[in-house]
Image (cartoon, rainbow, N blue to C red; front, side, top):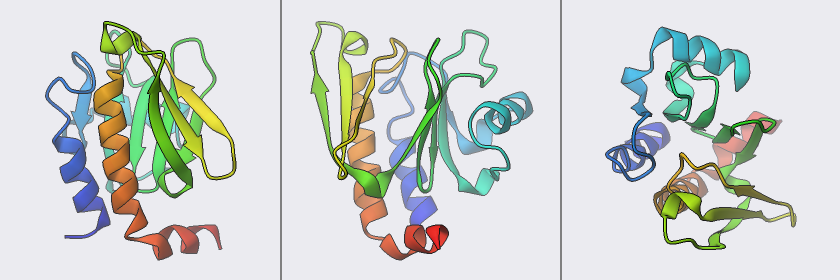
Length: 153
């Protein structure tokens, strides 16, 4: 099993209601409209073989907002926010801060090795499942350090 297959298997474990009520899409189910908008709003020129999975948070599932999990990191665009990106190998720690009775109202903080951090607050995302998924994907990425280093060269 290679890195992408391991990551897709990890993502698939979270597809059934653990990340969101609906909209979690395994790679084989990404529509052509979603793929077009993934390239427009997230990563121009991305190929489907680099995608692990997609959490589409738009009401009509158009792919304009959400969380795109790739083999190197996560691209995200939350409602009324600017898009962002981080690499798995840059993550130092994930933590649910400001826990709320409803998991989707909590905040997931991702701290990076360089001291930066990002907080994911979107109501469409279940933070406990997202934290577990990210922790698993970071563990897998750590076993393949050379691939990410080669991409930067």
